[in-house]
Amino acid sequence: MSALLTCTQQPWTVTYSKIIDVRSLSEFTEYRIAYPINVSVLNDAERAKGGTLYKQVPAFTKQKLDTTLVSKNISQHLSQYFAANDLSVK
Image (cartoon, rainbow, N blue to C red; front, side):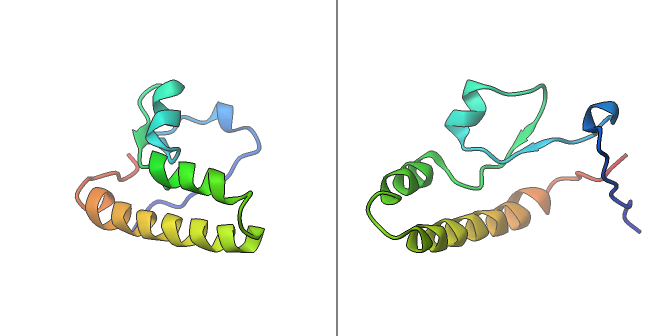
């Protein structure tokens, strides 16, 4: 059985075994905390495309694109990275 997740109002008081950073690679490279796992929900090209679209199309259109890309990328991370690596809480 998997470990139960708990939430805290003071996350700085908790020791985490794994930290997953979902920012794009350029954001991750610019500033990061020690030892995170980077699995970007949007890559740099997707992030740049979304950044230019918000002025060109209605907000809902951009949100649909972002949601589609994020969902696709999360699915790939789950099947390719997380399924192949033991990230269980210890």
